[in-house]
Amino acid sequence: MPLLASELRDMTPDQLRDRLVELKKEAFNLRFQQASSQLEAPHRMRGVRRDVARVRTILNEKAAEAAKSAEA
Image 1 (cartoon, rainbow, N blue to C red):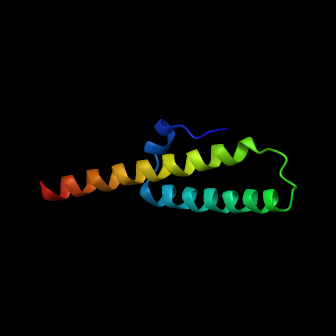
Image 2: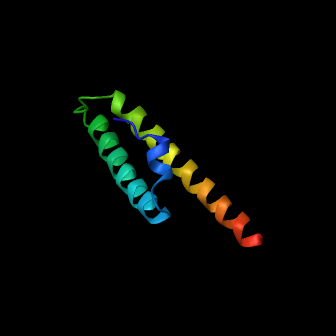
């Protein structure tokens, strides 16, 4: 199930970083399964890549927001 951006925006930056680590581990495991021809759900690779991108985007938004509020 893909992550929803609205759910991610409710998380703290630390929670987002933890989720990013989990997703990267999952992506590694999926690549390993693909290399050994044991991948049962190839569509999951695309979903994990998109989830990683979604988490990174939200992290960048939060960092920009924090920098903007620090300037003011």
